[in-house]
Length: 261
Image 1 (spheres, rainbow, N blue to C red):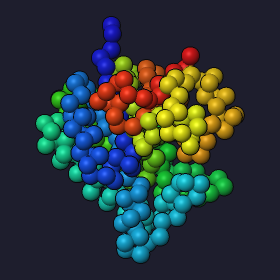
Image 2 (cartoon, rainbow, N blue to C red; image 1 turned 60 degrees about the vertical axis):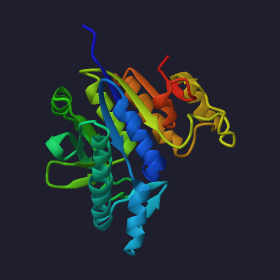
Image 3 (cartoon, rainbow, N blue to C red; image 1 turned 45 degrees about the vertical axis):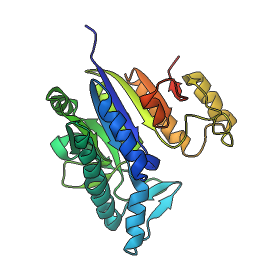
């Protein structure tokens, strides 16, 4: 029996932080037919609020060190301000969305990252996604909107990378659906030359990916993003795409499609 299609989209900061970009995207997202899930981050907004109250966020290799004070900030911003604003705009566009963190319905279970070289504080690494609960929402015509807060089922909230949340939700739901996972950010796709924003690589398979990493074409922040992409493909997700928000409305617009072969 063929599985129903499910589209999962993760949006990055450049969409969230620009009110017009966000409203335009959410209008397009609401118009997508069929079952869908939205995941959002919001790190820059959390940094702005932390700075405004005199709390200096600590970053190591582009990753946030989440101490108790910063955990309170990211929870307020991700699960509160951003999540509810997104849900409100989707409701405005007749998309019956429901805002969630991984705590709600025990949807995403994680553990505090084990300290190796760096102590990332209350950063969470995902152990399980409760696909049956997420599916119950979808089957009741609700569109889940997830922020990047998880928990360990022992009362501890955890800050989790939003790309990882998207990847793990996609993997969990792939047991029930034919899942397409789309990562939307400020670029039109994976670039052959970072100085040329039009040099989008249209297709990347796993062999090409490994070669591009060796050549240094894929580096820095794109490394963990592509790692999440191929992890999802290797664990049951049917298709992964990367690009800016425009290809959601027009599939002919430039973007990168990833596959294993």
